[in-house]
Image (cartoon, rainbow, N blue to C red; front, side):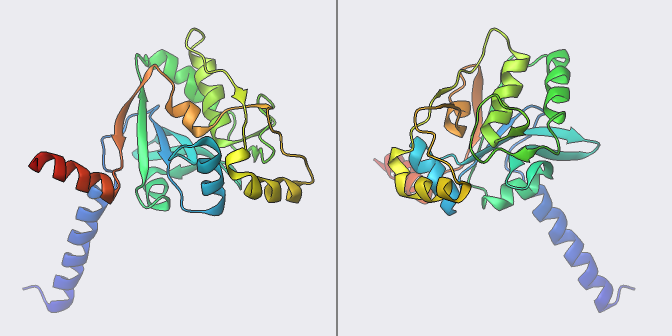
Length: 216
């Protein structure tokens, strides 16, 4: 007969199982491009400068039985669990899936992506200098390595919509703001045409608007 302590342990395990199964709000696949909306000063600086909800981006890989995200963060290029990626953004995430991603192409792309593991973060955002790498540059390199006919081009960076923040940021680096220099943002990766949206978080306002439109 189960005693109270055993019942408590059973209940906790049951709750954890239900919670863990609900922590990934979509069915992941390798190669999925995952985006974060972040409520941080850096995240706000990226989102304001690029007029975008997206501050950060990574790519999903599978390691054994675990879903992981390869991403370039301030501490370098790392593999973190998909669940921790989602939780870090409080589930304010989006997912884009590359179309016609043949397994042989993905294996080449995956190998390329993993070759960046351990590199330091590219704080000045110097595109195509792969000794250091920033988040969207990682995806830019990965996509352009895998799809020669469906490439992403860099475009002039514009910091004017968050000039005060980026002035302080680059002053700490001892550098001028690279206004107009080529770069690539999370929004540029989101706009990559050969990918489609498989998941995107909804704000309470959007939920209200959807409910209202259904009633009228």
